[in-house]
Image: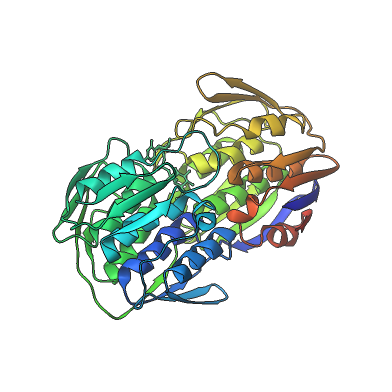
Length: 419
Ligand code: UD1
């Protein structure tokens, strides 16, 4: 558990190099097991979820070395072992080790994964896809086993383009005897990044980032080097904070098209946004108006559900009425209750939407962060609010942001984090 102390009201000025993507590195780490060789990853963010995933790899007898933001995984002597329940429960992405173990060992068992509570998070699409590829799946009360199977490959049509299920199927497909075609896939940039790593490891993949992905297994035994893509959600968080507080923020090493709906929204709110090839500059006088269009979350390239909480927090003082429609996770407006403590005027509707009426000022509050992005939204609110706020963090915000307190301090915020 940690405690954030924030004295709000400062403008944010400066340049930040964006961290590597949490949701990008976690599937790539699972893919290091599939590679059966040496993988060298760069721009690996120093996050709790990464530490736990490296621990999972160590449990499977992989050799792991971490030096700054570079991680080396040698999975040549990996063995099929039980992954401790505690590690599985730390994050949602641990479920990807089912597909990775199926590909590497032809079998494997996992405890049900954890992750932020955002409403129901079933894994039916993951299991249906693996079954279609030839895996024999057995469900226990809290466990999933892939019994010794001959993975054949085949065609999977996802009823919904789930990010995790697409990644799990891609990993499993690498261990199949034949070719796999995945249809109605998630198109998120993290899928493309995973494909990039797997291609470097000798797998033939086409179509990643589109609805249809073709995977033909293959392998080379050399060393694979991969630089993790920049974190579009960490970038969105800093941009929303600077937009709401006012100031000038330059984000370096960001891929602007990945952030298009967020940048469009911030421009609609009156921010001056300048996009360059691998950076973006945002200038704001802190006096925002609400976005002209409703913010409707959806699968990529629609507005990312992970950026909805921080965008909503940036709209708390915006002039007018902002409407948010959450379409991915039914429980993803839980932060509204905590944001109201800062004086935010948020009305929730039964169809999972939030109507935010801008207020002239926010005041300090003592609140609790129960999920990662909802917690980040509380920080964005506290940074704008008058006076000193406290956020009790149930180890949530640190799951997704690297050196966030130091970064915000460097930009001029008065903020402290104590463990
Ligand atoms: C990933 C991201 C998460 C992001 C989400 C949507 C990681 C580690 N996490 O989560 O930050 O918010 O994508 O962009 O990358 N669903 C099912 N059955 C399944 C799988 C999913 O019904 O088997 C539903 C979920 O309940 C949810 C929706 O599909 O309503 C989207 O989930 P999915 O795309 O799978 O998200 P995650 O991979 O869990």
